[in-house]
Length: 140
Image 1 (cartoon, one colour):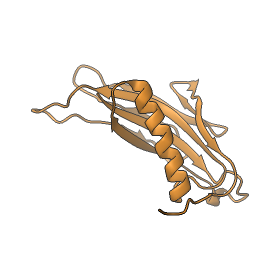
Image 2: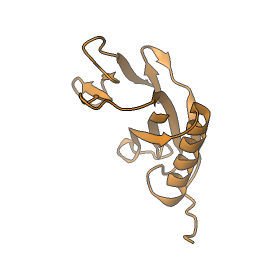
Image 3: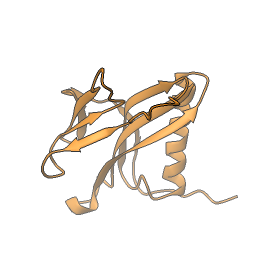
Image 4: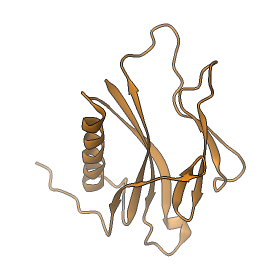
């Protein structure tokens, strides 16, 4: 099966100036035998990015928003993933639709409340958290 993981993140939360703190979203994908193997691989990859890049700097929180599972992909009609529509300023909530189609829009409302993401009014669970500066590993 092919698994797509959707994540939200907060980085550099120890910074005093708001402009120095960051938040965003990313996706990971893997071909795995079951969801737990995929989730473990996602976690390992995020830790690797933390150690070898500047993606998840300083005090960082990562939230696992959604797991999509595909046995195969369509061959005749393109599949839309992760449509996002944001009203007004970036601080406003947004509507996100995963795999919208003519049968369903699959949309949910995403919001941030006190540095905690909400999806359809429910708080999301913290997936990973890092404290302090980045510790880069030596290259082999």
